[in-house]
Amino acid sequence: MSAAYDLLVVGGGINGAGIARDAAGRGMKVLLVEKDDLASHTSSASTKLIHGGLRYLEQYDFRLVAESLHEREVLLAAAPHIIRPLRFVLPHEPSMRPRWMLKIGLMLYDRLGGRRRSLPGSTAIDLRKAPHRSILQDRFTHGFEYSDCWVEDARLVVLSAMDAEHRGATIRTRCECTALERHQDHWRATLRSEGGEEQVTARAVVNAAGPFVDRVARVALGTGTPAHLRLVKGSHIVVRRAYPGEHAYIFQQPDGRIVFAIPFERDYTLIGTTDLRYEGDLDHVAITPGETAYLCDAASRYFASAVTEEEIVSTYSGVRPLYEDNAKSNSTVTRDYVFELETDDGAPILSVYGGKLTTYRRLAEHALERLGNAITIPGKPWTASTPLPGGDLEGDFAGFLWQAHERWPWIPPEMLQRLARAYGTRIVDLLGDATSLSELGEDLGGTLYEAELNYLVAHEYAHTAEDVLWRRSKLGLHLAAESHQAVSDWFAARL
Image (spheres, rainbow, N blue to C red):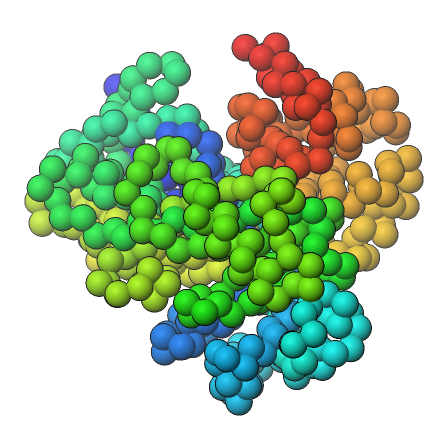
């Protein structure tokens, strides 16, 4: 007899995890399936920002900006370990937008953020003074500074899935939904995993498959189902630290786009992103030589020292599943989310298009509200005031880190800061009763010990070295090849 659920969520990216969390917290019996790892596609390939979207003001998308700025505050309070404030410096480029326009735009940005804004507002700055004088080219003399937030994007997905499971949801990774059979009051889904095929039923389906959403819609509704996506690839490069300081830069480009340069993983600078129409293999998305050159040139227009391809230590690319609104430019396609609810021939299916990290929690509320037109959704919205796992800090992160140093003085400061940032209060579950590094098990290199791998497998759905080194963390940038192999061998030994 097949298992029965209230809601089947197809897709383990940020939208799927957020919807599963919200629904489970309202008492629904939820199953989330993801054919790969959580956040293995778009949700781990972002610019890693929780932000209002300053450039969306030029598109008059005030609703999206206002909602995003409100959600920035909500998420910063819910996950202060993986989300942190970041100041952005916007140099004025006289040949592009005039200074008065930038000033008015930032004033509006501050105003849309609301009275409860916890982050400092925008201000004009003199780029002829330190530290910018030695970082930027001499031709840049004036600019502006404003606030947004940085986020560990893949961890945001994983923590949302963890909270969903804590509230009763079933999370299945490496489990593909291969067939959806519609009945009047339920769906019968065929799932395929390493254990073989199985069938489950659900009163409703949420199709939150990101770039695969049209594919899942066709599985459910037939091959004649119209496509609604515009797939736009965004690529990033990672170089050795390009400048000192903890601020980010936002660079205007001649094509009207903007490119960010952001401090990344202590030793690096992240530069991105591009916007290219994509029609390739969704399972193998990679940067092109043209994109590499574009990002190097974009940063080199501003930095005193040019960024060259030889400095690149890593790259990543993802495909944004944007709702096709027939905009002429990939940069101006709406980043807002759109729902397609189909109820005509039986049980409902809700397909989710677009969205961004910043608004995922609100998207989940709106998705369940929309689905409530077809089935009964119990409970009320609850996620706005509930922290994500590890986010229940007493006071600010600095105070939490100080307490952690006092409790575990035997952990090297660099390692403790990384663990505190990644796991917040859940660091207690990871470290257990250990009183020395030797009690954390095998030393896999750098700051990685076996105890962390055990925790990630037991609590965070990790199955492979890649899951650990590139999604649950970015240790892949820091560890030597021998350590990469040691982590792979550790997982292989578990099979």
